[in-house]
Length: 407
Image (cartoon, rainbow, N blue to C red; front, side, top):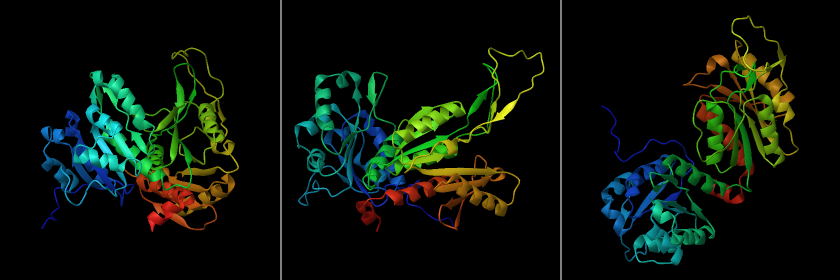
């Protein structure tokens, strides 16, 4: 007999919000129809979500919908137990109308949700996702109240997007990533930065043609995303890839080995703590690039020259580096032997080793080796690789507050 599931359950994507309780405030805008999806996405990352609705929001969506989405009862009025004195980990207002934003700024507490906000501000993080017609967003009132709130400690704006004459709520996926990031960063000992290279590089044959590597950049993006959600400030140095990058990641686009080296070095010189070399950097460059377009009527011979190893040129005294070793046609035993040699010769903190035959769009098996340890960890997916790297460095930079929360 098939196992029965509660219809309100969600498929877990990660544990970045595990053990955290979030108060979710819904105000009276049409974007309230998106809030159930927002709540369920928060739950997919482990959060418990408690919903608060303003009277005007009930005109757009029934409380029953949010009871289903959150798997918790919905608060619309205060009772004798003083629900507004919240001990949650954060409050989210999504959508936030101009009316509610103004109340937040002026200290008005005329509803249960508004009272919760006044009690929470200054004590815990408050995330605000504005949503309104652009004519309202352009008023002096909006600018004044937004500025007042932005100056307060622990108030974060989930930046909206202007479209169809409306200031629309940030995408749900981006909003949840930012919330994971901000709440996780509170458990790191300091502002910790990571630079991640990803994707292929190119070397030009002429002004039209080039040589490159087969690389989607999917693993590097997974790593950058995981580091970001765990609270690290992340810069992704991205070679030419075929998919859109998430708006919440700071990205630097490059094409060649030289451009990637320059961008990585710039981030390290700025004080990056961690450098992850996940890009498929060309081992050879075209010896001489031709100007214009070469004729296709003639035969073409290319002379290639070895390119400098990117990882060897990016070093700093306190920089923690992660290297990658890809082999093909060797046994797993031989792969690990070569990876151990590379771990020593490159002087990296961690090294990810895998075989070309173990990589596909669906799978990405690999082995993780660390400096000073004889152990080898087998990993079976991009998600596992990204989590293993991020968790390793999270433990290195975790504050006393974070260690207490983990216990």
